[in-house]
Length: 640
Image 1 (cartoon, helix red, strand yellow):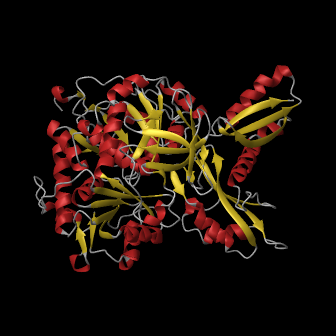
Image 2 (tube, helix red, strand yellow):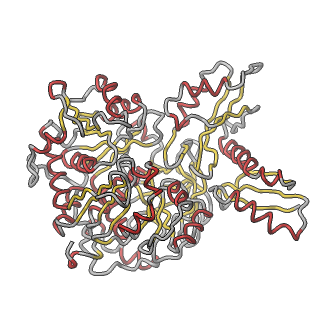
Image 3 (cartoon, rainbow, N blue to C red):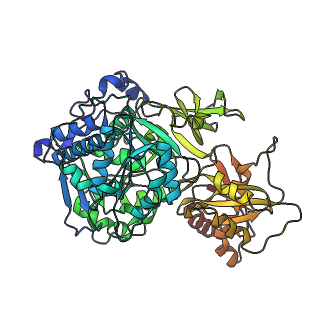
């Protein structure tokens, strides 16, 4: 990239000049928002957004692909001119296969350069449907069938991956499937399997042969969400939803053309495809792709600091599990002075982990919050406002957050007062207009345009949002959504089980792990391991299998006879904290733990310690903090 093309650039905004606007106060934000968002945005579609960056400097590098996630790798480089050309060719390829604006291209791919061509090419020709290739074959089939997949792009046979075996197992049952496109394979046209390389090479790179004019309200993609063990829940994103995400992230993270971002997030996750990929591509930055496996590749973390030294990223951004794991990777002699921010989302960052990251890097920790239904980031810690660890900051410009009280049928009752905990509702240009299957839209919005997040939170007097718990049942394991309902159905199928509930147990690494509570039928007995084996055999997704099953009697119920899951979450947290504090007991310290509701934090663990002299309490308090600080659930110590 030429020196003239380097530096700050918000190509998506017609009104931003040579410097980023200050948004340090509510008044400055209000002044910024006086210009209607529709007048600001310079791209109607994701294709237009990437084209802006290509026009800005077609010779700039958009992708550096590192085959083994090593700083010593010779990267495969793709310029912006080449990126737009390949996306155009991919769109033309899909058009030639019969894909129109309402047709779906699904893909099962690791992180390869072709994956980006496929995602944005599919959005240009029709509707993209990125699917997690690590799911079981039947789960993939359910998602593809629910999406109405017309063309499927998948990785061909390769050692270390079973993607192609899954495709072979499910293709016959996909009702609308017309063609399969194989990456890294020769294809077999007679069998309806086409080579990606052969098909794309035959298409022009300088124009869209279909002549499509993409509207901002056109559907760009279906993303699966809401747990992967239940009925497929497909979020409809418009092009406007996705372009807004790119615009907001570019603005608030102060992206610069020519800057590198270490990239290891999957494209079936909105954080990877939109927050990182699309925002980078629309601002002239470069994705340094950390091998086909991304952050799942152990080498990516092992080589993290040499990679930072070589590629000089300003932001280290990933899910909290990766951020926490980075704390144990020695920096050594690597020069990591380029890092200005550390950002994380997908699940909560424990406050202690945030403090440790701040201490290690000497940079602000930007915690973000959003969901697939808001096209990813909806709130974040503004760089020019005081950072409050544990908070997820403020809504991005033109977006809004309310805390509301709902009745037992998820109907709106009232807005909550300052610092009063309630359900988080969100509105703005990133918010979707509903799920593909209308049955999932029941209770999805608290009022028109205001999506029900399923999370509990509060807004403080300065407008900072604090997440305090879950209103709905989803278990979030390392950013991976798990729907409890099918696991509970499996437990209910056992003849000895009367009641069953699956909730998330706090975990210092993954955030939450699924655990089950059951109440047995009167007089029923179980052999050791019987129920565990039963549910394991009937839960096809390994990550969703409960790590523990507890027998309780009676099961806590609400006044209308429903299982009261908050009580089970507190009980699970109590059990895990008691086990975590076991080293204190081994050293002769007497303690007990209780967990319950808290007006500010949502849930709070109370550790009562008895018999410790005043002179020794500081040492014991530090030991307790070292053991419990990695958890998201807050704790307090009471001495007796």
